[in-house]
Amino acid sequence: MKWRDLAEHQIQKAKAEGQFDGLAGQGRPLPPRAGGDIMSAGLGIMAEAGVLPREIQLKKAVDAQRDSLKAETDPTRQKEIMRKLADLEMKLAIEQEARRKFYRTT
Image 1 (cartoon, helix red, strand yellow):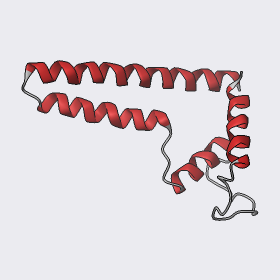
Image 2: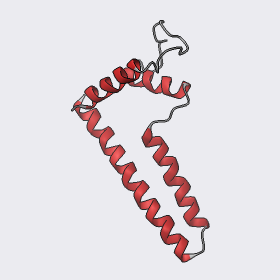
Image 3: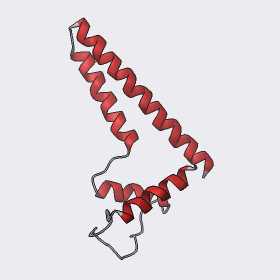
Image 4: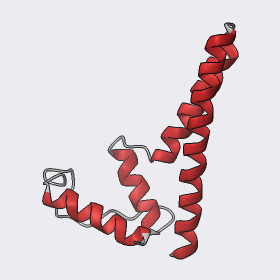
């Protein structure tokens, strides 16, 4: 399944569940945005709703984990933090690769 089809499926699912009901600006066209592309419009809507893309959430989690690692002095706790950091970095790499593949196929 292509990303575009997956995104469309998620939109239809949210619409069926009523998640778009009562949103600000409902029934009106989207305002023009700098950049002029659909991706800019989508990211702008997400920002207004206070929603961050998963890739950005993971970047923040990786940074926080790195800060925790720098502050920790207990070797046992450091290993635990490093395991979690490696897991977060792997998830971030997967998200970044998925984004790159998405932009190559559209």
